[in-house]
Every structure is written in structure tokens, then in C-alpha cells.
Amino acid sequence: MLKITIPGMEEITLDHLLLDYNGTLACDGRIKPGVLEKLEKLSHSLSIHVITADTFGSVQEQCDASFIHIHIIGKEAQDRAKLEYLKQLGPQHTVAVGNGRNDALILEEARLGFAILQEEGCAAKSLLASDVLFHSINDALDVLLNANRLIATLRT
Image (cartoon, rainbow, N blue to C red; front, top):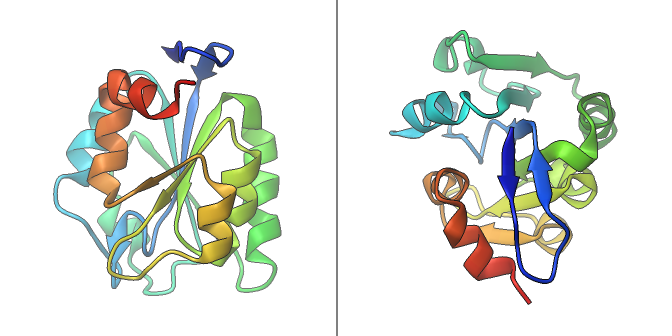
């Protein structure tokens, strides 16, 4: 569990980290350097979930760690499939991270939604649905590892 108190907001209690794979954790199917190490650190306070259609067929190999729960979805209605998975976790206790149009619903419904803008871009719909935009997945994970950064961004 990760608790964050942000001035002007209710206390945030997070139990889950729900991440898109391609465009978020990975580029061209390959996980970004440093990501697994940060996810391992975060796994001590959050359950780690990767949800993907696995476009490149590489998620099992790239995210082969006991602390990562991988959920592969079908090619149709991916936004709805991701939202249903989020609802099973409990949106009020989840931070969702993504970049694609099919991530917009989870970014909007999760307690915190982080949009990522890397090599594959970020869909405008997802950007507008998010609470915070990050330049990289490593920056987003670092904010969860050092909550003072998030406080500085979201306080009113």
C-alpha cells in the first residue's frame, strides 16, 4: 500500500499499479532500460499489473518476473477490456499508466492516471483523461518512488 497526502485533495491510498505495455513500458516490444528494477522496488508496496494486446508477442519474455501480473487482452474493444480489468482491481486504489487511445478509459477512471509521451507518442484522448503527463515511463515510476514529486505537481 502506498499512501500519498496532497494538499487540496483527499488522501490517496494505492494498492495497484496498472500499466499498458507497448508505448508505455516498452518501445517496439522491448522494455525500456531501468523499468524492471523500478517495478521490483514498487512491488513492495503495490501489486504490479501489465495489460496488453501484446502486439509484438514479447510481453511474457520481457516481463518475466514473479512480481508482475500479465493480462493479455484481445484485439477488439481493448479500451473496454482494460476498463473491466481496472474495475476488478478497484479504480479508487489504482494508478493507471498508458499512452494509447485504448488507455483513455483507465486513465480517467483510476484514482491517478499517468499519461506517457515517448517514442510512440500519446493519444490526445489519453492525455486529456490523465492527471499527469510524463516524458518517460522512468519519470512516472520515479514519482511513485518519491511521492514528494507528485505532491508538488498535484497540490492546489
